[in-house]
Amino acid sequence: MSAWVLPDHIADVLPSGARHIEELRRDLLDTARSYGYELVMPPLLEHLESLLTGTGEALDLQTFKLVDQLSGRTLGLRADTTQQVARIDAHLLNRQGVTRLCYCGPVLHTRPGQPHATREPLQFGAEIYGHAGPEAELEALTLALDCLKVAQVEAATVDLADARIVTSLLTGVPLAPGALARIHAALAAKDTPELRQLTRDMPAWARDGLRALVGLYGGPEVLVEAKKALQSAPLLDEALSNLKWLGEHLEAGKISYDLADLRGYAYYTGVRFAVYATGASDALLRGGRYDEVGAVFGRNRPAVGFSTDLKALVDAVGPRPLKAAVRAPWGEQPALREAIAQLRRGGETVVCVLPGHEREIEEFRCDRQLVQDSTGAWVVSAI
Image (cartoon, rainbow, N blue to C red; front, side, top):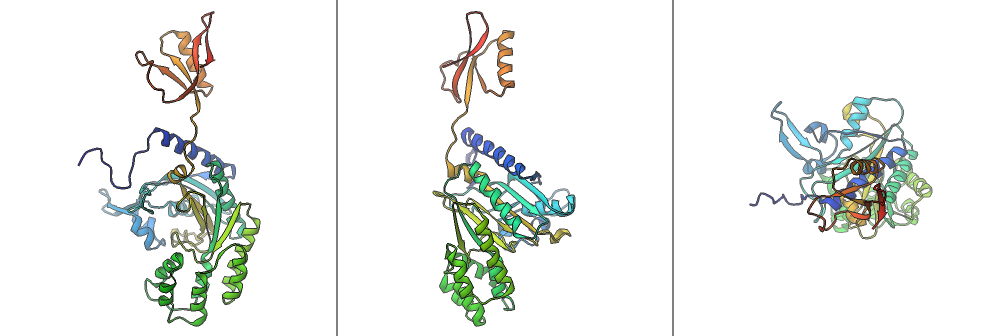
């Protein structure tokens, strides 16, 4: 095998894409900071039990595992950053009241999430801890939509669901090991025959409610239909009420509801959301409420957040135009060198043309050049 062949679904990012990703990373972090979110940088590598406790089988299967040569313990390469940020909030910061944190870094997946997806996403996310009300969910979703606007995503659609609906329908229903995951998968895929098979021995109210969920997707009318189709219970009624409130307060172009959509990690405990855009094959961003995520670290705090893959975002929106640059001759004259340095200090990109390379294709959009005027001074002029 050639030394330059990379593993499947792993790829180098070349200059144009890397520039776009880096510009987007800075823009998203600045957007999160404008909401009061503080940046944290968790490690790529952790003890496996810290990464996976409470996350469910899906994340376990996505996590690369290895043995630490120093301690002999099993380590994991993170496949998601939420658990790490929960650990930081609960164990290291241990603040009272609301804490807002954001992050941006690579994660690794054993398998691609989609046929052409990378196994090395660059995950950006933001999380708010300490508030149990729907205001935190609204803030997280508003920030998520602002981030997509910064990324120049057009025609975004917000899709809302709530994990408590299925939880309410299954309350008091005995389930065999693994049955819950199969029910979630059947609901997400809207696989009615599989769901009928899985629910055949359940009480009528649970069986009929779960089967009804498959058809409960669409606009705000879905919440009205759900009230009629599902047996009333405090947890279910609260979930539907919160979804209605969130939809009414969310400033988004299009809002839809899919009460059977339970895709994502198993730690979600309440509202779940996904944002789609024209031309993207899957959701560009996912998030929701996960109040139990910090319990294993000794602090069970309310939590809401979202994450997105910057590489997928860049692919979805297309390339950004190159920023203008200044072309300058190479030379040893102090005046020339000072003129170049002054332009760079002022934020300009200055590309020096090295001797013998004057006719090469430029990698930057040089719309100006540094030339000597009649007095011998170095000035910038249009090309």
